[in-house]
Every structure is written in structure tokens, then in C-alpha cells.
Image (tube, rainbow, N blue to C red):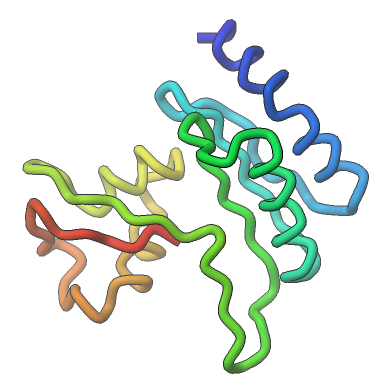
Length: 135
């Protein structure tokens, strides 16, 4: 696994360099399954978007990367969906299982629940086939 970790770190090194040189706080760099996890906090939404632009320069599809780039809340009416993606619930899934798989932390399941309050009324009641927004 460390070979894969080093391979992905090398692939996304320009993103890591950008994060370091632009005052973005790197909170976690780890493997989740076969994917590199980059968790960071940008001081502004603009800088968050610039990190995402850097990621897309390396690989427009970034299928081997889980990036959780946070920034302070945007002004009312402003939205950014660059970090959002969807996940189709499989039989046997739970929000904590999905959270563990995607964020590396099962306790972050409320983040997924909060992003899907239009579909979910109970964090313990998800159904196979549902498409969930993953922030």
C-alpha cells in the first residue's frame, strides 16, 4: 500500500505544493482504499476553487483521489459544487460506512446526512439505489 501511496503523492505533488505555497492548511494526507485522501482547509472560497483547478490540471477525472477541501461559508446566495459528487447507495450501506469509505472517518456521516436532508429524514434509514450528494 505504501507504494500506491507514494505513487499518488507523486502524481498529485503539484497540488500538494500549491496547497503548501498558498497558505492552505493540509489536515490529512492518507490512503482510503486505493484512493489518496487530501483533506485541507482553504482560507477563502476563491483559494478552494484554485486548489480544485490544480487538481483538475493533474487529472480532470481524479478517480484515484478523495479531496475534501473546506473553506469558510460563502456569502448568502453563493454556491460552489466543485467538491460535491454523488454516491449510489449499495445494499448493506449505512451513512457511517459510506463516510468511512469516502472520508476515512465513520463519524463524519452527519455531513452526508445534512447535505441530503431533502431526501433523508433519518440518518439510519437509507435505501439501496438512492443517489446521495457527497460534500
